[in-house]
Amino acid sequence: MFAGPLDESIVKRARDAGLLDLKIHNLRDWTHDRHRTVDDKPFGGGPGMLLKPEPIFEAVEALVGDETQVILLSPSGRKFDQAIARDLAAKKHLLLVCGSYEGFDERVRETLADDELSIGDYVLTNGALPAMIVVDTLTRLLPGALGDDESARDESFSHGLLEYPHYTRPAEFRGMKVPDVLLSGNHAEIEKWRREQAKQKTKTRRPDLME
Ligand code: 4G3
Image (cartoon, rainbow, N blue to C red; front, side):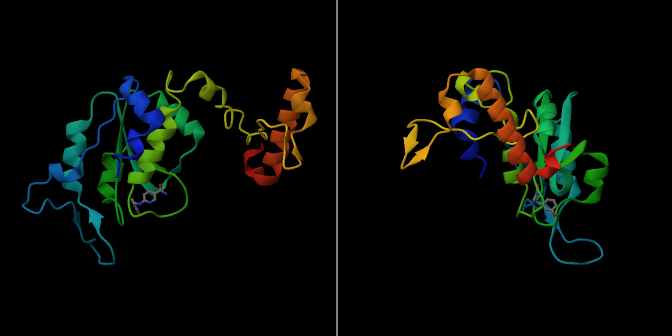
């Protein structure tokens, strides 16, 4: 599941360039029984299974260093966003713990985790996709991970607004014209137009982003 996405384009390039050292671990490697059991039924009854604490504790204890941030991925975490991404991209070492099904024994949360993140208000079968989303988001923030062309595009959320409309050639396509101001060569006017468009779009689509 991790192999495909993390071996693509920019993430692959960053790994190959040594900007990012990424390792995948299997919780089952820290079990001791014949069936390599990682889950169990919840005390008190109820549906679903929980990840047993022992393999997670052993795995985390084996993998952490002095500068490790241990982060659980779960729907009850704080909502992951670009500001959190910037903060995490500056960390030396992250350990992302992906639970599945009904999640973690509470003692993992209480004593092992430094933080708990959610990528949004929906439930997935496990935390692997959320972990990959976190990795992808952080990777493009690592110095040198994006080419110059790509870096220039990194504006979308850095002003806290949605992107202004973008156009490329041709200047007219099937009767649809690119706004004149973008062809004017007047960079002050272009900047003003873009700022206004971004503000309008954010106000109508995402008023929550406006202060
Ligand atoms: C823990 C994360 C893990 C508790 C994980 C389910 C969605 C997200 C899981 C739990 C997940 C998210 C595994 N689903 N929104 N599934 O980031 O109830």
